[in-house]
Image (cartoon, rainbow, N blue to C red):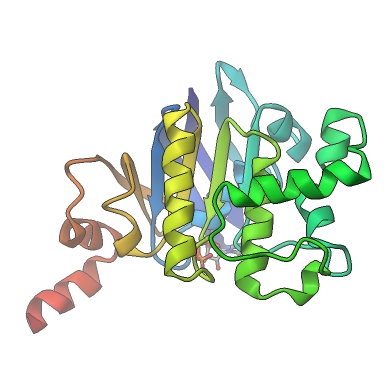
Length: 246
Ligand SMILES: Nc1ncnc2c1ncn2[C@@H]1O[C@H](COP(=O)(O)OP(=O)(O)OP(=O)(O)O)[C@@H](O)[C@H]1O
Protein backbone atom coordinates (compact mmCIF):
# COMPACT_ATOMS: atom_id res chain seq x y z
CA UNK A 1 0.00 0.00 0.00
CA UNK A 2 2.91 2.33 0.80
CA UNK A 3 6.10 1.65 -1.10
CA UNK A 4 9.33 3.57 -1.17
CA UNK A 5 11.85 2.78 -3.87
CA UNK A 6 15.49 3.88 -4.00
CA UNK A 7 14.70 6.90 -1.83
CA UNK A 8 17.77 9.09 -1.41
CA UNK A 9 18.64 12.41 0.16
CA UNK A 10 21.93 14.17 0.77
CA UNK A 11 22.76 17.36 2.59
CA UNK A 12 25.93 18.69 0.97
CA UNK A 13 28.54 15.97 1.50
CA UNK A 14 26.39 13.99 3.95
CA UNK A 15 24.35 11.15 2.51
CA UNK A 16 21.40 11.10 4.94
CA UNK A 17 19.40 8.41 3.11
CA UNK A 18 20.90 6.19 0.46
CA UNK A 19 18.66 4.18 -1.86
CA UNK A 20 16.06 3.09 0.72
CA UNK A 21 13.52 0.55 -0.55
CA UNK A 22 10.79 -0.57 1.88
CA UNK A 23 7.25 -2.01 1.52
CA UNK A 24 4.72 -1.04 4.19
CA UNK A 25 1.46 -2.90 4.82
CA UNK A 26 -1.80 -1.41 6.16
CA UNK A 27 -2.83 -2.53 9.63
CA UNK A 28 0.74 -3.02 10.84
CA UNK A 29 3.10 -1.37 13.28
CA UNK A 30 6.27 -1.00 11.22
CA UNK A 31 9.24 0.13 13.28
CA UNK A 32 12.21 1.96 11.83
CA UNK A 33 15.17 1.23 14.10
CA UNK A 34 18.54 2.93 13.86
CA UNK A 35 21.19 4.78 15.83
CA UNK A 36 21.44 8.57 15.93
CA UNK A 37 22.34 9.83 12.48
CA UNK A 38 21.23 6.65 10.66
CA UNK A 39 18.68 8.55 8.55
CA UNK A 40 15.42 7.97 10.46
CA UNK A 41 14.37 11.61 10.69
CA UNK A 42 15.28 12.17 7.05
CA UNK A 43 12.95 9.32 6.09
CA UNK A 44 10.22 10.87 8.26
CA UNK A 45 10.69 14.26 6.59
CA UNK A 46 10.56 12.70 3.13
CA UNK A 47 7.35 10.86 4.07
CA UNK A 48 5.80 14.13 5.26
CA UNK A 49 6.68 16.15 2.19
CA UNK A 50 8.80 18.67 4.07
CA UNK A 51 11.97 17.43 2.37
CA UNK A 52 12.15 16.55 -1.31
CA UNK A 53 14.13 13.44 -2.33
CA UNK A 54 17.11 13.70 -4.66
CA UNK A 55 16.17 10.35 -6.13
CA UNK A 56 13.54 7.65 -5.75
CA UNK A 57 9.78 7.40 -5.35
CA UNK A 58 7.06 7.23 -2.73
CA UNK A 59 3.94 5.42 -3.92
CA UNK A 60 0.73 5.28 -1.88
CA UNK A 61 -2.08 3.11 -3.17
CA UNK A 62 -0.63 3.13 -6.66
CA UNK A 63 -0.11 6.89 -6.83
CA UNK A 64 3.29 8.57 -6.66
CA UNK A 65 3.53 11.36 -4.12
CA UNK A 66 7.27 11.96 -3.83
CA UNK A 67 8.55 15.47 -4.46
CA UNK A 68 5.26 17.20 -3.80
CA UNK A 69 4.41 19.31 -0.77
CA UNK A 70 3.10 18.46 2.73
CA UNK A 71 -0.49 19.21 1.72
CA UNK A 72 -0.38 16.28 -0.72
CA UNK A 73 0.72 13.91 2.02
CA UNK A 74 -1.98 15.24 4.38
CA UNK A 75 -4.62 14.86 1.68
CA UNK A 76 -3.52 11.25 1.13
CA UNK A 77 -4.15 10.57 4.85
CA UNK A 78 -0.63 10.89 6.28
CA UNK A 79 -0.14 12.46 9.71
CA UNK A 80 3.26 12.90 11.35
CA UNK A 81 4.26 13.55 14.93
CA UNK A 82 7.76 14.98 14.74
CA UNK A 83 10.58 14.53 17.21
CA UNK A 84 10.53 18.26 17.96
CA UNK A 85 7.30 19.08 19.78
CA UNK A 86 5.58 21.72 17.63
CA UNK A 87 3.08 23.80 19.60
CA UNK A 88 1.74 27.34 19.59
CA UNK A 89 2.78 28.19 23.19
CA UNK A 90 0.36 31.08 23.79
CA UNK A 91 -2.73 29.25 22.59
CA UNK A 92 -4.76 26.88 24.72
CA UNK A 93 -4.29 23.13 24.77
CA UNK A 94 -7.68 22.78 23.03
CA UNK A 95 -6.66 25.18 20.24
CA UNK A 96 -3.39 23.32 19.82
CA UNK A 97 -5.11 19.96 19.48
CA UNK A 98 -7.54 21.33 16.92
CA UNK A 99 -4.89 23.33 15.04
CA UNK A 100 -5.56 22.70 11.36
CA UNK A 101 -8.74 20.75 12.11
CA UNK A 102 -11.14 23.54 11.12
CA UNK A 103 -9.38 24.05 7.80
CA UNK A 104 -9.35 20.32 7.19
CA UNK A 105 -13.12 20.08 7.23
CA UNK A 106 -13.75 23.57 5.83
CA UNK A 107 -15.91 24.54 8.76
CA UNK A 108 -15.27 25.93 12.20
CA UNK A 109 -16.20 23.74 15.11
CA UNK A 110 -18.40 25.82 17.49
CA UNK A 111 -16.58 27.05 20.60
CA UNK A 112 -18.48 24.85 23.06
CA UNK A 113 -17.85 21.73 21.05
CA UNK A 114 -14.13 22.38 20.60
CA UNK A 115 -13.23 21.72 24.22
CA UNK A 116 -15.31 18.54 24.38
CA UNK A 117 -13.83 17.27 21.14
CA UNK A 118 -10.24 17.92 22.29
CA UNK A 119 -10.97 16.24 25.63
CA UNK A 120 -12.50 13.22 23.93
CA UNK A 121 -9.48 12.72 21.65
CA UNK A 122 -7.05 13.00 24.58
CA UNK A 123 -9.06 10.59 26.69
CA UNK A 124 -8.63 7.93 24.01
CA UNK A 125 -5.04 7.42 25.09
CA UNK A 126 -3.62 9.89 27.64
CA UNK A 127 -3.40 8.62 31.18
CA UNK A 128 -1.99 11.95 32.45
CA UNK A 129 -4.50 14.77 32.97
CA UNK A 130 -3.90 17.57 30.46
CA UNK A 131 -5.59 20.92 31.33
CA UNK A 132 -7.53 21.92 28.21
CA UNK A 133 -7.74 25.66 28.93
CA UNK A 134 -4.09 26.27 29.87
CA UNK A 135 -1.71 27.86 27.37
CA UNK A 136 0.07 24.88 25.78
CA UNK A 137 3.47 26.48 26.45
CA UNK A 138 2.86 26.23 30.19
CA UNK A 139 2.11 22.50 30.48
CA UNK A 140 4.95 19.97 31.02
CA UNK A 141 6.82 18.55 28.02
CA UNK A 142 5.14 15.16 28.43
CA UNK A 143 1.70 16.80 28.15
CA UNK A 144 2.87 18.74 25.08
CA UNK A 145 3.88 15.43 23.52
CA UNK A 146 0.36 14.12 24.14
CA UNK A 147 -1.09 17.30 22.59
CA UNK A 148 0.77 16.86 19.30
CA UNK A 149 -0.21 13.22 19.21
CA UNK A 150 -3.87 14.15 19.77
CA UNK A 151 -3.55 16.72 16.95
CA UNK A 152 -2.43 13.98 14.57
CA UNK A 153 -5.41 11.83 15.61
CA UNK A 154 -7.92 14.57 14.70
CA UNK A 155 -7.04 13.81 11.10
CA UNK A 156 -8.11 10.13 11.37
CA UNK A 157 -4.89 9.22 9.58
CA UNK A 158 -4.43 6.19 7.35
CA UNK A 159 -0.67 6.45 7.83
CA UNK A 160 0.50 7.67 11.23
CA UNK A 161 4.22 8.45 11.55
CA UNK A 162 5.56 8.70 15.09
CA UNK A 163 9.15 9.96 15.39
CA UNK A 164 10.60 9.17 18.85
CA UNK A 165 7.32 10.21 20.48
CA UNK A 166 7.76 8.30 23.72
CA UNK A 167 10.99 10.02 24.83
CA UNK A 168 9.32 12.46 27.24
CA UNK A 169 6.54 10.15 28.47
CA UNK A 170 6.34 8.27 31.77
CA UNK A 171 5.64 4.55 31.91
CA UNK A 172 1.83 4.82 32.09
CA UNK A 173 1.55 7.23 29.15
CA UNK A 174 3.99 5.19 27.08
CA UNK A 175 1.96 2.05 27.65
CA UNK A 176 -1.24 3.96 26.81
CA UNK A 177 0.30 5.24 23.56
CA UNK A 178 1.40 1.69 22.67
CA UNK A 179 -2.15 0.45 23.30
CA UNK A 180 -3.48 3.21 21.04
CA UNK A 181 -1.02 2.19 18.31
CA UNK A 182 -2.24 -1.41 18.51
CA UNK A 183 -5.90 -0.29 18.29
CA UNK A 184 -5.22 1.94 15.30
CA UNK A 185 -3.29 -0.81 13.51
CA UNK A 186 -6.13 -3.25 14.20
CA UNK A 187 -8.49 -0.83 12.48
CA UNK A 188 -6.32 -0.77 9.35
CA UNK A 189 -4.03 2.21 9.96
CA UNK A 190 -0.35 1.87 9.08
CA UNK A 191 1.82 2.99 11.99
CA UNK A 192 5.43 3.95 11.32
CA UNK A 193 7.16 3.92 14.65
CA UNK A 194 10.60 5.50 14.68
CA UNK A 195 12.86 4.68 17.60
CA UNK A 196 16.41 3.91 18.67
CA UNK A 197 15.23 2.10 21.81
CA UNK A 198 15.48 -1.66 21.60
CA UNK A 199 13.13 -2.21 24.57
CA UNK A 200 10.27 -0.60 22.62
CA UNK A 201 10.73 -2.74 19.55
CA UNK A 202 10.23 -6.43 20.13
CA UNK A 203 6.87 -6.55 21.88
CA UNK A 204 5.25 -3.90 19.75
CA UNK A 205 6.32 -4.28 16.14
CA UNK A 206 4.84 -6.38 13.37
CA UNK A 207 7.88 -5.58 11.24
CA UNK A 208 11.20 -3.85 11.85
CA UNK A 209 13.41 -2.16 9.29
CA UNK A 210 16.93 -1.47 10.49
CA UNK A 211 18.70 1.61 9.10
CA UNK A 212 22.45 2.14 9.34
CA UNK A 213 24.41 5.03 7.81
CA UNK A 214 21.43 5.97 5.66
CA UNK A 215 20.96 2.48 4.24
CA UNK A 216 18.34 -0.19 4.81
CA UNK A 217 20.22 -3.09 6.41
CA UNK A 218 17.32 -5.53 6.72
CA UNK A 219 13.58 -5.84 7.36
CA UNK A 220 12.54 -8.49 9.89
CA UNK A 221 9.10 -9.91 10.69
CA UNK A 222 7.47 -10.40 14.08
CA UNK A 223 8.63 -13.73 15.47
CA UNK A 224 12.19 -13.07 14.28
CA UNK A 225 12.85 -10.06 16.47
CA UNK A 226 15.77 -11.02 18.70
CA UNK A 227 17.31 -8.01 20.52
CA UNK A 228 20.94 -9.22 20.13
CA UNK A 229 20.48 -9.70 16.40
CA UNK A 230 18.76 -6.35 16.00
CA UNK A 231 21.63 -4.66 17.87
CA UNK A 232 24.17 -6.44 15.65
CA UNK A 233 22.36 -5.10 12.57
CA UNK A 234 21.90 -1.61 13.98
CA UNK A 235 25.31 -1.10 15.64
CA UNK A 236 27.74 -3.95 14.80
CA UNK A 237 30.69 -2.44 16.66
CA UNK A 238 28.74 -1.92 19.88
CA UNK A 239 27.39 -5.46 19.59
CA UNK A 240 30.95 -6.85 19.16
CA UNK A 241 32.22 -4.89 22.18
CA UNK A 242 29.35 -6.15 24.33
CA UNK A 243 30.08 -9.69 23.15
CA UNK A 244 33.73 -9.37 24.26
CA UNK A 245 32.72 -7.95 27.64
CA UNK A 246 30.19 -10.75 28.11
N1 LIG B 1 19.51 19.68 7.55
C1 LIG B 1 20.64 18.94 7.56
N2 LIG B 1 21.81 19.48 7.14
C2 LIG B 1 22.96 18.75 7.14
N3 LIG B 1 23.04 17.46 7.54
C3 LIG B 1 21.90 16.88 7.98
C4 LIG B 1 20.64 17.58 8.01
N4 LIG B 1 19.71 16.75 8.50
C5 LIG B 1 20.33 15.58 8.74
N5 LIG B 1 21.64 15.65 8.44
C6 LIG B 1 22.63 14.56 8.56
O1 LIG B 1 22.11 13.43 7.89
C7 LIG B 1 22.39 12.23 8.63
C8 LIG B 1 21.09 11.52 8.97
O2 LIG B 1 20.37 12.34 9.90
P1 LIG B 1 18.94 11.99 10.50
O3 LIG B 1 18.53 13.15 11.34
O4 LIG B 1 18.04 11.58 9.40
O5 LIG B 1 19.27 10.73 11.41
P2 LIG B 1 18.42 10.12 12.61
O6 LIG B 1 18.61 8.65 12.53
O7 LIG B 1 17.05 10.63 12.59
O8 LIG B 1 19.18 10.69 13.87
P3 LIG B 1 18.52 11.27 15.22
O9 LIG B 1 18.03 10.09 15.97
O10 LIG B 1 19.69 11.96 15.86
O11 LIG B 1 17.44 12.23 14.79
C9 LIG B 1 23.20 12.66 9.84
O12 LIG B 1 24.57 12.51 9.53
C10 LIG B 1 22.85 14.12 10.00
O13 LIG B 1 23.91 14.83 10.60
